[in-house]
Image (cartoon, rainbow, N blue to C red; front, side, top):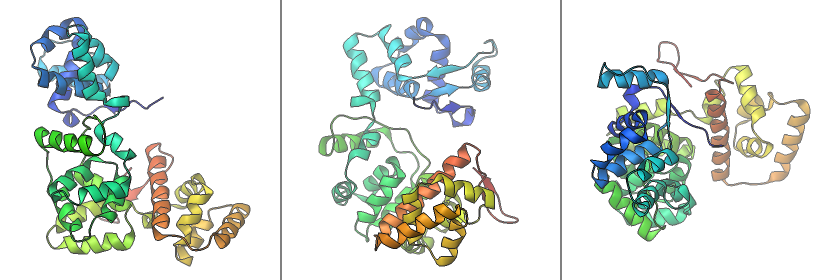
Amino acid sequence: MPTVKIRDSYESLTGPEKTAIMLLTLGEDRAAPILERLDESEVRIVTRSMSTLGSITAELLEELITRFTESFAKGGSVIGSADTAERMLRSFLPSDKVADIMNFIRGPGGRSTWEKMSMVNDAMLAKYLQGEHPQTIAVVLSKIAPDQASHVLSDLPEEIVPDVIKRMISMKSVPKEVLQDIEDMLQRDLMLNYTVSSDSNNFEHLAEIFNRTESDRCEELFTTLKTSHEDAIDQIKQLMFTFEDLLELDELSLRTVVRACDNDTLMYALKGCTEEIRGKILSNLSERARAILLDNMDTLGPILMRDVEAAKAKMVAKAKELAETNAIVIERGGAGAMQMVY
């Protein structure tokens, strides 16, 4: 069963999301006449927000209603989903029109354009994008999953990569017409009829991309971009949590991460480590597990650095996953610096 995202911050809501919440609060009978007054493009925008809204806390709902009008009573929580949106649309639109809108929202198979992009071969996507304008490449990389974006980035011609990252750093909001044109292009050339995805924070997204990029390549790009985008690069570095940061965890947290990783991940990650780092991680395994892992590493033979970096990225992802469930605490920054706790 998919996890329902919880929304509890008023500042994080977009205008269409606020509208979607109010319509859900009003209920189908009262909301239908309002939706009837919107044009089709507005219905699409509101419905898209409604279908991906998730769970709205009672506190957020109360704050939203209060800001609209003091005459509303305090409300309970509401849940926006594609099914809720479709049911509301069916109360005032013909079935064929509802089907068109929901296909626009869900995409074939219930997936969006950017979710479907995960099915495209990384090398093929890079080859396709290298003929596009750097701004187009930047938009695509900002929308797809960081892991895939890092692979595409490494397959792009080296001379265009700095320009693409500069554009991602300075990218604000993308006009919906431009985004739609890019989606149409991808649908036409790489996929079938898929749809749009939600926006993401560019710096956070870039941090995740760099987390999955080979260390030497990372440092090379940072050096190239430092002069023109020093503040942005520093912010991205602050948002990054790297394999080396694992070693700064307290003893219990590091042990929790190490023991949560499968044997293959540890084997590949440690293959590219110094003896000091390898020893620190191995010390968190039982004697038997350590012996088995070392034996497997001895028989593994030479491996690609890309596989090593991928294994390290898996360990970092596992640490973040554990932090999100409060199994460990990750603190960023030293004395006198701002600390970021995940």
